[in-house]
Amino acid sequence: MRKIIIILSIGISIFIAILLFQKQEPTISMNKQIADNQKFYTYQVVNTYPHDLRAFTQGLIYHDGLLYESTGLRGHSSLRKVELETGKVLKKLSLPNRFFGEGLALWEDKLIQLTWTSNIGFVYNRETFEKLNEFSYPTDGWGITHDGKNLIMSDGSDNLYFLNPETFERIRTIKVKEKTNNGDVFIEKLNELEYINGEIFANIWLTDNIVRISPETGEVLGWIDLTGLIDLKPIPAQGIPQNVLNGIAYDKENNRLFVTGKLWPKLFEIQLLQK
Image (cartoon, rainbow, N blue to C red; front, side):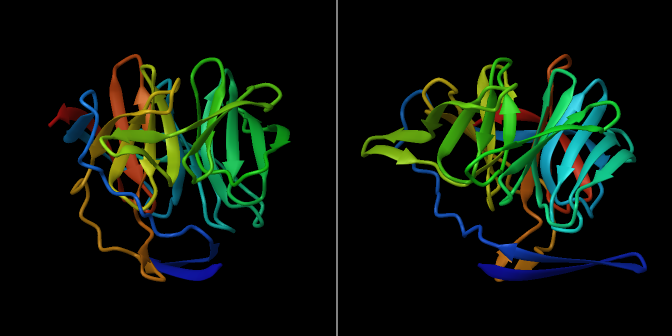
């Protein structure tokens, strides 16, 4: 376990976060011996929006013109409703200090929020943020989304768990893998998730990469390289930068893809370009 202290100077105020960190440095690298059907993507920035640089983004959703965001850090974790164009926080619910907020999903009219190591998730009314329920799970909580039928959850490993959205019972598990000429390579550090047009998009923790995954087989369908999206001086903790890419939201009606990161001052609308 690592004790991490982050100090940010914001105007005249000081933001201090102390973490007990267990996440390890990633070992994943893009294997070049890929299957013929695998694709690589870069990006083009379409629009740029303000983002609260005090928000340690863990989960991100777009719905009806607004963003819903889950933020982490013990003592600073929250659930937020955010105006896209201005980054203004319209509504905020702070979590009790013992919880480290993680992934966020919208199921019908309910927001479902994970916590990191507490093995507890919360269900809220989307409009009022009233807590409706709690549920438990045996792993870490990292990212969560849904495919219209089941919730899909990550825990930082190469596993994705499909859950009943009403009972939270685990239905099935898939392992995310990249097929190469030398056999399968399992992809770990799966973090924030978004279900987009029949695929699961997942941030890879501590990288500039998003992986596109088949929800049926766990096979990697493609990689998105977002290197250079933002120029930030790394905020290190034990040698690990903390202000990294994390946060994927999709506007299905208008086919818009949004990405941001932990402690980033900007949120980006991007268009994917195949390499």
